[in-house]
Image (cartoon, rainbow, N blue to C red; front, side, top):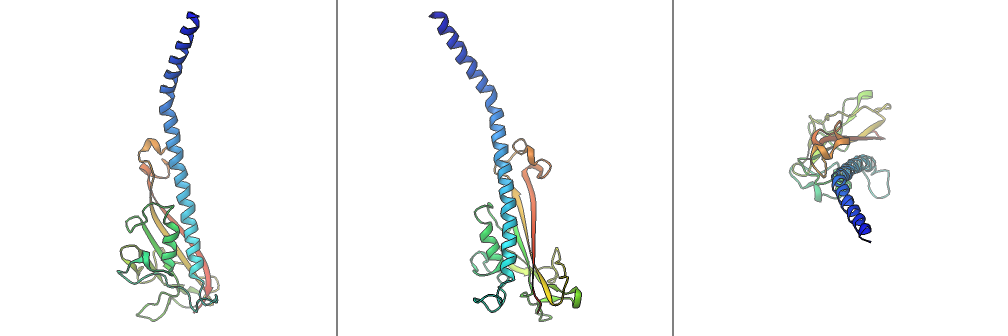
Amino acid sequence: MKQGRRLKRRGRGQALVETALMLPLLLLVVLNVVNLAYFFLVTINLTGAARTATLYSIEGSYTPYANQEPSSGTSSGATLTTTFGTVAYTAYQDLTGAVWNPTASTTSIQVCSQINTNSATGQGVNGAGASQKANCVVCDTSNGCLAANSYSGNPAPSADPEAPSFVLNQVDISYTFSTLIPGRIFNLPLATLCNGGTCTFIRRARMRSMGP
């Protein structure tokens, strides 16, 4: 009986030692998995947000509800997050929830659409003929929407293969990604993608609409 009790005590002690040795490794694996999963969640969400916003940007006169394409965003200085019905607002709504803190310091949205009328030219496109492209504005939560490089865009949109009969609408979302759990040791799978757990995503979607 005494020998059996001694063996049980030794077994319990050995289990505690093994647990103490393995627990840091298990936590390291779990936290790396959490950060990697969040990385893919953000990637999928950004891709979906860009696609949804671009699809919305080409709608308007082709739907029973609206008679023209929706506005890209607010005017300069306006609150983007409360301006319903714009392309940029649609993108931000898709981002909110899955993407942490989509503020002006982390997120910008470029919307290239022929609805962006240049006051100097009175047109929503730049160029002519086969090189005709949609005008671009950049939107964030602090500044509203501003002309992007005199509406030419950065990155600039491409001309539609059948321009000027069709115009490519483009949405670019730039987001500065930070992992949920900071520290290089907790971001081993992301070491080559995100230095120190921080990197910038750029997601683009393009869809064509009828020309002006």
